[in-house]
Amino acid sequence: MIEGMKIRKAVIPAAGIGSRLLPLTKAIPKEMLPVGDKPVIEHTVRELVASGITDITIVVSGGKHVIQDHFRPNPALVEQLRADGKTAFADAVAEVGELSRLGHITYLDQHGPYGNGTPVLNAARTMGDEPMLVLWPDDVFVAEIPRAQQLIDAYERTGAPVLALMPMDPADSQRYGVPVVTDDLGDGLLRITGLREKPKPEDAPSNFAAIGGYVVTPGIITELRRQTDAWYEHRTGEVYLTDAINVYAAENPVFGQVIKGRWYDTGNPADYLVAQFASALAHPQYGPLLRQMAAELD
Image 1: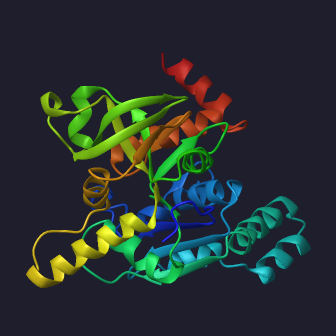
Image 2: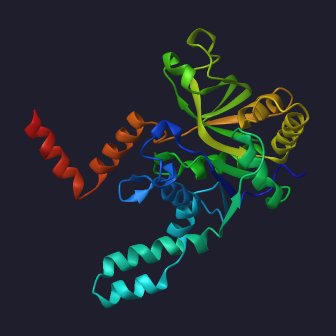
Image 3: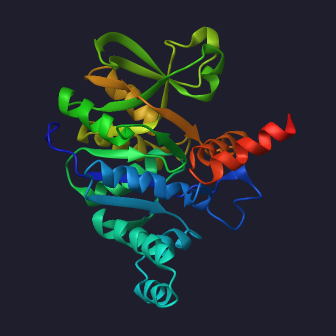
């Protein structure tokens, strides 16, 4: 197992049911809910492609065919739009289809115990023995340098697993995985020796939150396999990526990279509305309209 290989592959776990967003997600996968003029998963795919990732595996479950439909090239629709003089729409549809080619998107059905470690392990079985990015599809980052690229840069600097981090109000610690930080290496790179899942504020080991972006190396995959084997033996508990990272970090180098940029979570109603509003404000056409409306409401 070579821990220092170049990262060219990524996993997007998209098998969840989106229970926190029901009833919105009863018929529409949470990954396909719009943020701005794009579904949230498209923001993630674009981020990966912009960061040089050439192989993207999206791990899905039943009812997620609409994700595949969205990224599937549709030349007949593009041709019809051009014939109708709707060039801008034709270009937009063609561009989404091109993402599938640039990212070499493949789809994999999820199998195994409950927990966010399962889709990562499912994808690892098809990806070979090399490091990969793992990004959740309900996060949107607005950053000059994509979050994925910042994680890749940190991995190339360290040759070890890397977690995406953001500064956190300690009062919010029960919403996140919180790293045990032991060293500050500069430029936002931190050495960590553990990860505590949703600790109480008084028990939080640092003022940083892990926010759904990881460079996962073969050593982490080995620990995920061990946890999955234990689940099949005892049929209890769940398999979580953070648990595997926590165990691995106790004896091996693991790092966190504080991401430069704005992070928007779309996984619950309040944060989803914030992401929508922020995206609309940043839009050159919709932003001025919203600001004018807000001023009139005052």
